[in-house]
Length: 380
Image 1 (cartoon, rainbow, N blue to C red):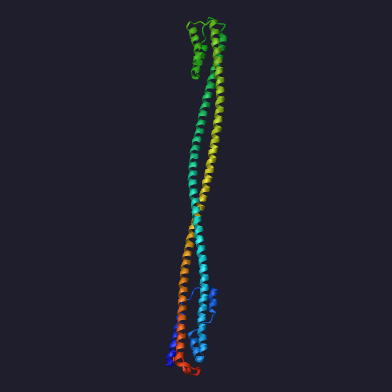
Image 2 (tube, one colour):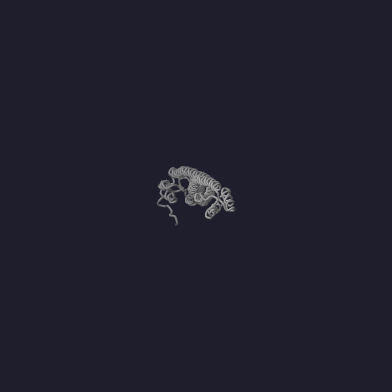
């Protein structure tokens, strides 16, 4: 009977020790684990050694030994609770930090997207302005080219008219000189050379638009030629007509030169204006190209910032999820450790109750056969 009772006590102790060994260790930081591992641990062998080396009559020592075990479990509970609380604080800080990183990256992503949209819209506007400037530049360059072509034609016409009027003036002067030759030959025939000069003068006047000025002379000469006589009155009348015609030609030359001077001034002013406009448009094109290139740099930068923000969001989201998973593991491990410690305390309470029951039933003679010299050896 005594052997059976002792085996029951040892079985309870062994069960408690097995349950203690099966408890999943709680994850702690390295320093905490090292500190914990330095604590002495009571094993099943300690119970056997205690029973083999002590007289059961020393009931106070056994009770003290059980109290030490309880104290050790409670101390371990307090230590694990403090470490668990510390770890939960660290995890809470980690949650807040990772969420803050996510929030910062989200705000940066939103701001970057706003900047990106603004830069893209501004690029479209700048491109439209550039296209408008290019079209205007082509139009003004074409206008300048047309102006230069027209001016060249204008100069050619001026030279042609100057040549014609100069020829007419020379022919008039030649006619006047011929009048001087046959002025003394009144009532004579009209010289053929004079008629040829008038014919040439008439031809030139048609080109220059002054034929109405030459026709009176031509008509007068035809009248004199038809009657084959040319008196003093005819000479004077023709000279007056020639002088009037010479004055008209000289006036036409002066007007033509004045008009050319004005045309040249207008041309120079138009060229200066067009060149100024073309210069402004060219500058606008260059500025637009520079601005668009700058905007493209902004777009590239904002795309890079957006990509980095998205990467940061993803990384911190993954780390936050890992932290939540770690927190859940810590909770489960702490709950499992607490459950194990409660089981250990319950088993120790059962051991204490069994010892008290054995003491009440068998008194001092219970362990008489289990003195150190008569202690059984496990396994025999």
